[in-house]
Image 1 (cartoon, rainbow, N blue to C red):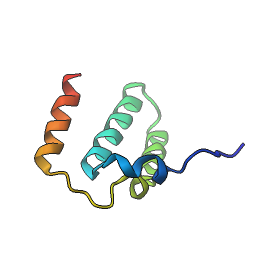
Image 2 (image 1 turned 120 degrees about the horizontal axis):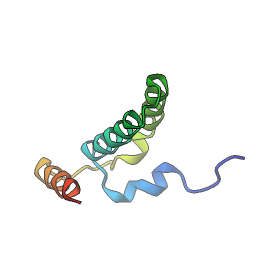
Image 3 (image 1 turned 90 degrees about the vertical axis):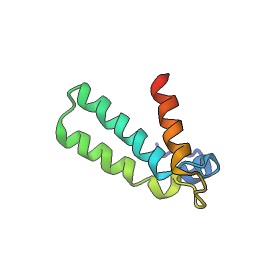
Length: 79
C-alpha cells in the first residue's frame, strides 16, 4: 500500500527545523541502530533514506541563531 498522508514538506516546513536539528536527529537514529547492532549496510541505507528528506524538512528561511541551536541541544540532552 502507498502512503497517502501529508508530505514531508507539509508536515515539517512550519517547525523551523535547522540543518543542525536535522543532523542531531539523524545522529540519534544512526546511534540507536548501531547500539542495536544493526548491520552496517542497513545503517548506511537508513542514513541515505533519512538524508533524502532533508530538503523537505529544513525551514527555507532559517532564522535561528547558532546559539539557539546549541541551547536546544543542551536542553534535549537534559531530558
